[in-house]
Image (cartoon, rainbow, N blue to C red; front, side):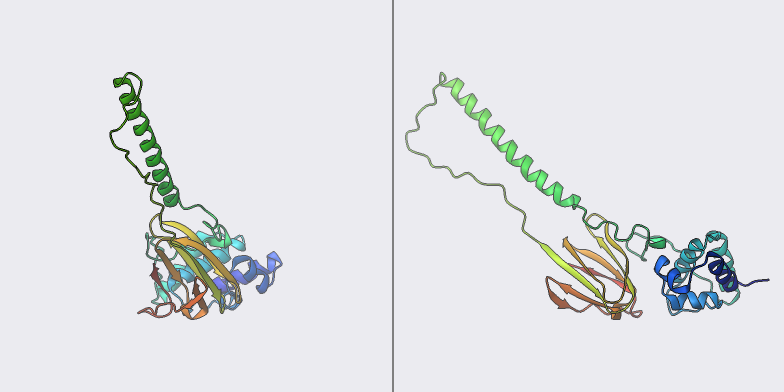
Length: 246
């Protein structure tokens, strides 16, 4: 009976693709795929990543991904390494798009919170104008349609609506090696970026407000804020973790 790795290799060859082509299509490193086909799943990664990579590869090879994962879980349990399920949490583990779908979701979106702020300021200014016109109309009607002349000149200074402070910043990541990044807008829970970066690839984001950033390996990334190099914080459990960026 074929083991899981042999089934993956047979399915890939039946599909007529190489390991390199499969890696490019699934965004999973080729050395990981080679280990999977050798029936070796003991990678130095959190179980979440291993299960996600296995699922992506099985789907790409047009296998029954869920059934394949169930057999994978049984194999890991038999080896005493029962994998953790991907319990989706609001700010917990990374939820990377599978098979490269929805990569970069959220890029270019207008921040709903920013629209709300400008809407409130515009609405407030309009309300002030309406109130002034109503008071002027009421005063004119009481004085026979002619405004009474003031005893002394009164100078008033129109107060313009306060403009929101420009807190926009440019966040740039450069991949020193193949890795993955997830960026979430803390105020709205909007996912600004959720995908892999190839070695040498650079991504920039114009953001406002606190962000929650999850990285696969902090040593494989260089981070810049407004053009200035900034160190990625160290994590208690290694190079994988999440940090808050003001």
